[in-house]
Image (cartoon, rainbow, N blue to C red; front, side, top):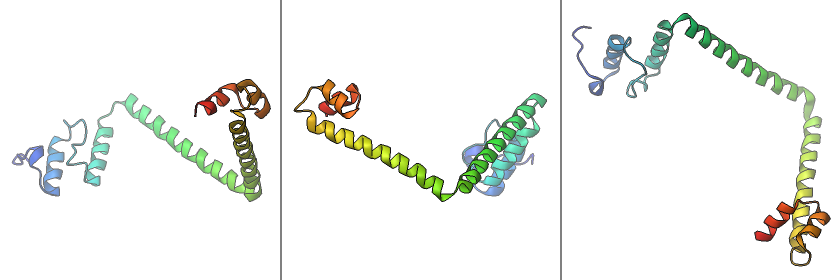
Length: 140
């Protein structure tokens, strides 16, 4: 390897990239762009980075990995519980959301029809929309 003298910009083959990595791994802070195209070199860089970490840095890394693992398990458990609740519960929730959306659309439609006839406060009281929502409808 002492005879390998190519600079980063002149790396052409995968062999060149590996030789550069092996020669420069200790001084590299990040994987250079041209080398990150090779997944194996990226992985080797990660391993080399971990090998040079202080014990406190390793502990922090381990805690982050445990946290990520816990979050993935929480998502899996939530998906499982969702499947166990079954289709009926999902339908019920969907119907409730659909009903709320339909009511809101109905309120907006009524308010639009009343804008030229009544004042904003009366429209708000009649439809259940906030005064701000009625004012926005009037501006639109």
